[in-house]
Image (tube, rainbow, N blue to C red; front, top):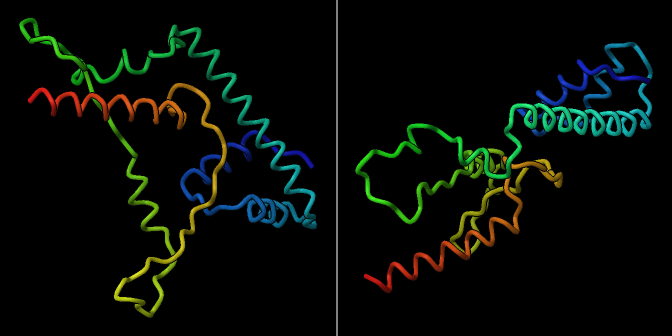
Length: 169
């Protein structure tokens, strides 16, 4: 069986909006739509095709970014929001130009996508239900998502900076 790029792109967009959308359900839907008998091997074929599609998209994006001169490691931070990075002529120099932390509201999304809490209360603590998030162990690759080791190093530097500020006050 073959999968068109339109089909793969539609799955990419749909699964980014609804993380619970499983590949098996998607393949079964395609089989029903094409009036083809479902076979379990189609899911692994779709998975391989989807992974190849994503790698082609990433490679194309890297080439476009390089052609536009946007392939330096710090390009996003150097060319962030002009209002946030604009410096006035007599503004004093600051140790850090900009300090940003964003979780994309992921913590709230995870809270909303949980099973219902159990009906009982144990030791006066109300427990939340299990997470229904789909596990995603993929590596984001690129400069948009920082890897955990980079985040940990930055967190250590920030903690040291905060301690230095407290001591100097």
